[in-house]
Image 1 (cartoon, rainbow, N blue to C red):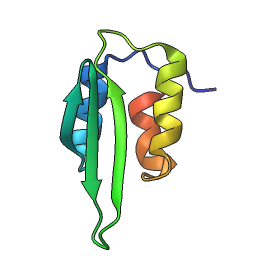
Image 2 (cartoon, rainbow, N blue to C red):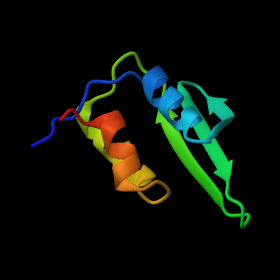
Image 3 (cartoon, one colour):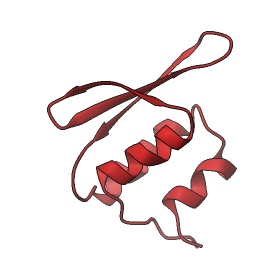
Length: 81
């Protein structure tokens, strides 16, 4: 069974930037990422910019991102094989 990687907030933000998201705003340590699809739908994720994210937080971010990104595309960034 794949194991969840240990990632920092900065690493997670870079992952989503590479998937077409842009930094929309930042409030404190939380960075709001947004992308607009070709049909005009807004997709938003909020990522805490911490040096190391808890596994539960990473899992929650992963599940939220699955609404917008396919599991096949997202899993290699978050899980080891």
